[in-house]
Length: 318
Image (cartoon, rainbow, N blue to C red; front, side, top):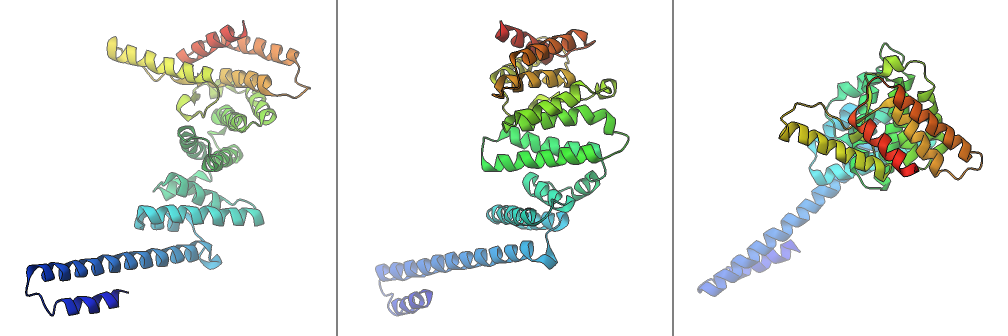
């Protein structure tokens, strides 16, 4: 097509004696150039897509964290989206045929978070804190996204990193045990898996190591949509912080966090209220509410969000 236009263009330049003919000839040249550039761009894009598919799916050149980072650095945005799609499809194919390996999990997280720190992913395999940190980053992405297939994938990836953090046995494991289980309870709750969420909450509330876990709190910014009560509490906490910092000129630490054990009791109550299972009677709900109250009054130190959430819970049960 472009060859025909070039031939036509050449004939037009045989006679440019007047301005109109010259303008027409120039217009044909511009049109030819535009069409050629579009065909060239399309050809380059298709070739790049074939190369990406070949590199990701060929067994002898299976994608790794380092190769994944290299691809993402070199690609333009449109091809980056294609690379993400192919990587996730390839991962799904591998997961169907076998277990989720550490390498595959790290590749998925790298692709999802667009992180450029390969060493962090590799070290996280042996560190409960780093695995928890990566799970937290994924949960933050989940919290900022609306319900979609991609969000469901991110939820499952967050779970996988939390499971890996629980499997790690090092000096930090005991101190973050309760926090890991609370976040797993949250992720199961938002998927409607209430019994699993209750099981993880129970692991927290019956844990004997609360003194070790006291320095770790549930970060409000990592929580996906749980209910209107939590949203209202976090909103009031942010407003309270703004007033103290801006209006009263008080330096205040972030208050949109929850005490881990207390939040586990609250989430347990939410699960009991939401489930339709006959075995979970009104008596069990009443007992859990009483344990929640006992835990609140037994805390030596509470944060603003704990108080607001407790008051809101009492008002809604009256």
